[in-house]
Image (cartoon, rainbow, N blue to C red; front, side, top):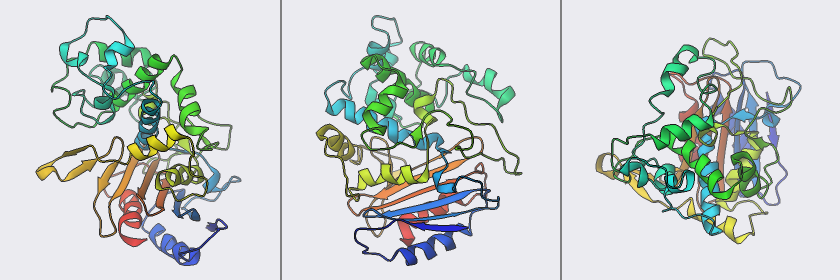
Length: 354
């Protein structure tokens, strides 16, 4: 077990005290590999641990699968392209993907905003996804469903609800967003993400494919057996990002403005502000608030924005308090289950403890 603290320019909060809080929180999480990372105005404290023996690469330098916590990257990409004037939130996806192709009237009305905010009326996954996925649900459910099938399923879809009227979490919709932005810019998604988000923010250890041998964390099932690296197939934009905990902090610091090297590019700065602005409410008494890409909750310390994700054998949590310089990133190499404490522990650090 190790404690790693970055050298701060200023230290308004004791890194030693933060390290003790992280070590205490880590005791609640059972995983082969665990990283809890905090940034306070650019002052970083990272706790690493877990039940497995540490490998040759420190845990905080391993790349972890983010699963659905990839979506804030897709959201920031869309916001930056809008700030650059290359697309608009109200552009219709079908018109960008396949101009002139006959689609259902509801599909014709689906905009880029609808896709990102889970208000498109599309299901969580395409209906024809499951027959090919179920036989390999615990090993590779997405790899057999490539990009062209995602696009084809979208163009042939029959949404249950009028776009913009109901919220329903959809990996399908965010994946379609990725393919639509690639079509609109004439640039592959992976290249577009790197050009517009990863490179400008200095996220050199963030990628959408497995890296060199020994640099990616290995996920585990609940019983401790390892699982293969995730292949997202055509659902790249919804869940393919892999990143080190240190890169996750860099990503979050850009949103909080806590890092000394906050973006100076006007379109990126505009996008970072845009993705933190609340845009919709849902649920009983409209209690749930969302920005373009983050879940937002009230706390005694002000609102917190966050997103969690899970793959076949890993979990991730990203969150921050806007305007305070506080960010929390957490990763674990065990799949979520009913009694799992990982997300609650990470969320508690962000909303209650720190």
